[in-house]
Length: 123
Image (cartoon, rainbow, N blue to C red; front, side):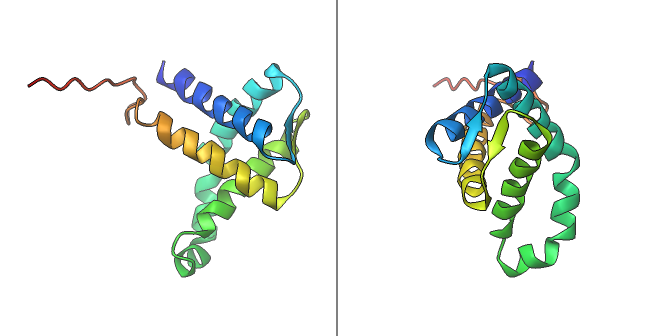
């Protein structure tokens, strides 16, 4: 359940990025779903290796280079998936900002174990 929710949140972020960033386009809804799934897989397997390899420059830029790494992951997904297009580094960076922000908002509702969590506070 949590995986599907995370994928839906990623798909929403990709849809918003395609809607508001000139240079990012998604052909149809099927491509959107596959892009969200592929981005999740790339972030799970390729991104940790990229972060490890770029650790010195990430340290020098106080973590800001992670934004470039995220843009690279978005560009990698676009290069692997026909129907999803990112037209360069600028659109990729803006798109990764939007996708990252929606993922951050979505993480409020999906716990670390991948379950939907609701906190109830009683007085």
